[in-house]
Image (cartoon, rainbow, N blue to C red; front, side, top):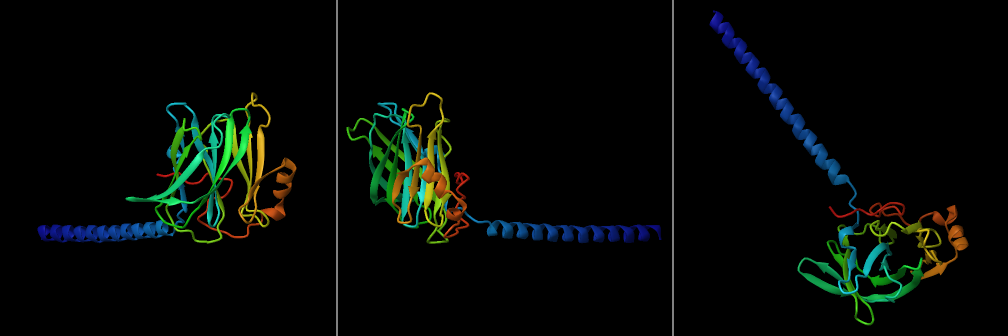
Length: 258
């Protein structure tokens, strides 16, 4: 009788353990499914900043070129570059879009020199035509007109398609000299595509040590005064004309590649 009771008790406990185990497995499976669902609903940034490939130093001259910001317009990339020398002049540029196994040339619309800043940096902008293509990387080749220095940088990778064809965003690159600041004002505003302040904060910087620019709705970039910059950054001009949940806000750094 006692043996029968023990057997029944053992079977009962085993059955309860089995039910509890099945319940736990079911809860774990549900939790995993929920996690996948939540992860799948997260917004994927359109562009990834490749910070470790955004600067290069020429071995013969020891001059460094770096990308400090990119304004993404519907049909154009405006790539802000810095050369750590005021003697290098405006480089010659070629740009390629590369995917796995192949590269194609992109059109360099124009190259704008914004002049020297702080007595130590040469600032400029490369205007590039681009098309929406997932998994492309943007590779830039630059060289001085005398051929004494050259650089190759690959600052961007597109990891998702653009959700809004009118999207305007600014991608920040924080690596580089501590005394050189690129600060976007408005991006995708009601009357202006973007404004930007560039400044050398070192106490030893010579004049001019700051520069203000605006980009019109047609993509034209031009220097402006500090007063014009402040006026453009008023609240009415900050209202966006389009929204893209995949575009990083102007005040934050773009995602860096994993």
